[in-house]
Image (cartoon, rainbow, N blue to C red):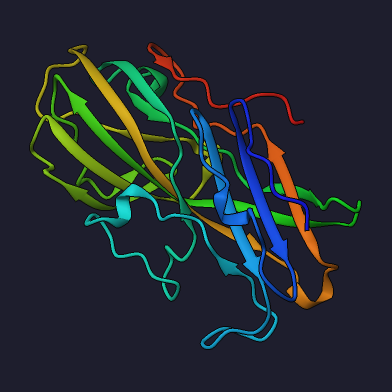
Length: 239
């Protein structure tokens, strides 16, 4: 089987390997700057898996190390690290939510995966949770349960200027926001954010229904923070 080449540029990439034996090169795919790689493989039946089930070989998201417990049996079965950082200026209780600590994620995306022989299939990708590490000049209410289109499910150091947040994405169309604690309306805050990872659902076909090969998909995908601030770029046109 042809060796898998690295992804270059700033993009979201997915790799699926199907083979009756080993998959040389599949696990050597490295996430480079602003590239998020997701990898699955199928090399035949494995104990504890359905006979036709892909095995997730993606390194777990940062938030799996203490913020929540990630296993293949819970809602964080599939996670990945998303290499993005962000500086955000906010204004307390601003009527325009985009001027608060506001962020928005894409909804369901259809992936078109193609192998080296031209065989292809489609899969539905849907983000379900997002993890953020935030350093702020003003405390954020990361332990508040309802934040627009997100529901806070876990936090660390909620009363600190250095905190972590994990939100379940309930309605991507609404966007999500986090309020500030005990400050006057209009008070300005600065927030430096590192995305700790994404949980997702991926609807895959039976691995045994696919022909052998390494299936690849790459698409532009971003976590958007409208309003003031700057986002490290994480997308390029699909190649």
